[in-house]
Image (cartoon, rainbow, N blue to C red; front, top):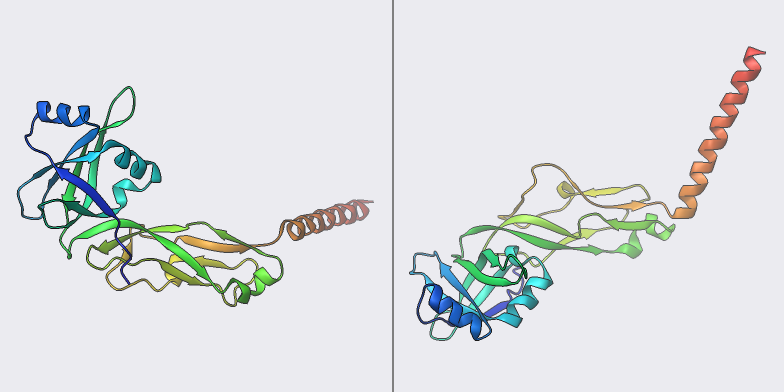
Length: 215
């Protein structure tokens, strides 16, 4: 059930303090620190271009990484802060926290919709609106679900799928404490416009009847 955890390759950084950090930046690296997990802090540096690429991909602060450093055991980490240059908005330092397999963390898990062809509402021209293509869940680091699945079989136009309609993997729960909407099937635009026209006609007829009654 666990999804593939992306690798994050870094180098051990010799020396600490501002001088060592400036040297790393001159070499095209972003200095960082890895802490927690009952081990001593580890000073690292990450190639600038690789870090920027991952930052631009999004969800960097909520993605679990497999940190690979030569001479060190691979370890699961999550980023806890990214310091940036106040003028250029480029990363200047990153902090990572080690996680045990039993650690609880919040992550965004993608939602996959199944059996669209079996949904009567979609067969009639309805449109699937994925309100939340990702759902933030509290999960265990050692057992992260790859995705959540929603079975659309039998859903009609106007039907809604809420978080309580999804069977969540054991040990996970939403970070939002309410029954929020995941997706719905809306009427096609043509049908919706037709319904609005009918409502307007009905309203006009009511007004006419009212006027006749007064006469």
